[in-house]
Length: 342
Ligand SMILES: NC(=O)c1ccc[n+]([C@@H]2O[C@H](COP(=O)([O-])OP(=O)(O)OC[C@H]3O[C@@H](n4cnc5c(N)ncnc54)[C@H](OP(=O)(O)O)[C@@H]3O)[C@@H](O)[C@H]2O)c1
Image (cartoon, rainbow, N blue to C red; front, side, top):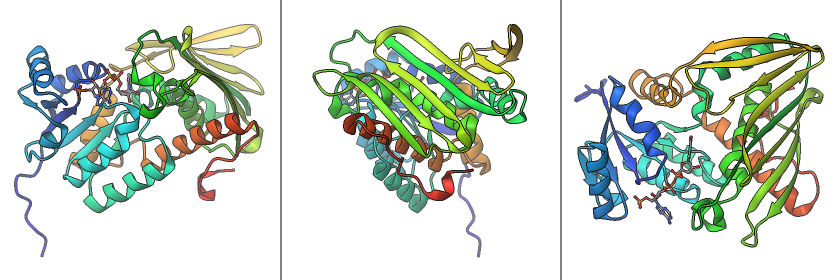
């Protein structure tokens, strides 16, 4: 007999796991949505949870992460903890029956991603990595153009994401918190290249400039994909703000001016010899897509746009790049053979 659903979900009650700065990107989207609401925030201290709830007009404040996970009136957790805590709290959340939108990177090892996949599958809950740029119409259009053959055969991809990090004590600088520029921002050009190419790298080579703590302050990487496509990228905490992606084919190139944080109207450039054709793309507000994607997945059973296999592959590539930089030799990412498409 099919069990009758009691109170089937029509509107998702979100709980913010921590008072992280990035929450401020999500809160306005949750407020505007008809299918979601920002119901609660949890913090390690009661005082900070209450102050945060008051500042942002959030109805409920929890004085511990555990207390929010134990509350039956929360459906979805937004995991905005530092990187090293993503896997542990995502697993705890799904075990408590919550769906989870987890900030990037979903975890800091493939073993952790495998544990998340297992826990989510056992609990029958959705987990998705919050790579917001993946949902934006510009990203979808870039992939469409490259895959259409408009550039000829794709040969080279170049990407960069850097900024100057001058906040001492920030978890991004702490190896124990999953710090380092490749985990923080290098993950974007890696993810972008893999997505648009539509395959996984067979071999990677990395070089890093390390801080005394051991984290990479600057990372330069190269990824070799099937069919002779090479992707190069850099990430850094020591360079001015740069955010770039470029796709170069045998006939033309495509330059994405604002690849990772695109807005409501963006321009991309199609480069043919010395001719530049500019294409304008109407977008949405940046963080709207990831919330709508969770709503579609939880309320309507659609697969999340970023699968856990996709997140696992990005993390496998990052780990291989870090291993390569340590060993000074090319490395193969830990990926199932089926993931590498010829
Ligand atoms: N997608 C994007 O556009 C984007 C942008 C920025 C950041 N991010 C990601 O979002 C996550 C959070 O980044 P953020 O810069 O917003 O973080 P943040 O401001 O440093 O906040 C992290 C929060 O984690 C909690 N926390 C728990 N244990 C902690 C510890 N040992 N040390 C420090 N904080 C601890 C704290 O909240 P309580 O004190 O309230 O418990 C803190 O406010 C990161 O994974 C980052 O990669 C994504």
